[in-house]
Length: 226
Image 1: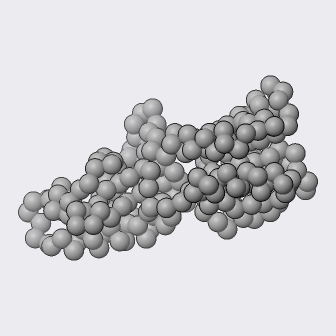
Image 2: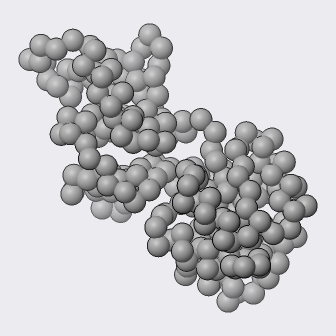
Image 3: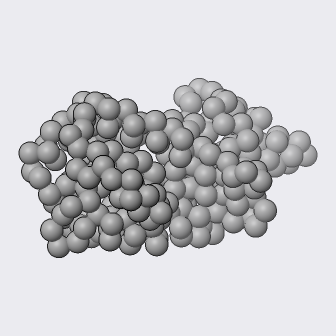
């Protein structure tokens, strides 16, 4: 599945220049020419990463960053022509993850975006109780799951299944192994039980169900780079 970037930049030529480089690396790019439009798009579209210019008409990048951070932990890269330390500190205080100054190299920007996604997908909190995969958050202490800040109501078995998949991140798990491990060896159901629960789990996770991959003739795996 392609990663989707929201590029917020009022300079049309700069937007086209940056967009071309991201598309070459198979990113899906959604463009916004000002902060107001950016917020409207963000409310209606699933976004994996935001590249945000600071100096824009109608609503500046600082305001956009602040509004987004009130609702989401989506990775944000700020781009600006200003290189002052105070501006960089402001960006980080508002919750930006990266800060890039103009004139910028689109190739470097794409590399930073890719590296940032790798850091933010599949991270674990210092106490080990919070698992973060993109917008999917699993709080093992509280037994809660959320996507983009919205609570997801999972059945106990769906929750156990999700934890089991994340525990074996990157490994192909057969239906038999999943059934025995999650339901127990004394369970008398058939392998379709696994398929049914995987289908329901993906549906509830929405776009973040992308991490649960089907491996043909083998089973399933939870893959961070899905």
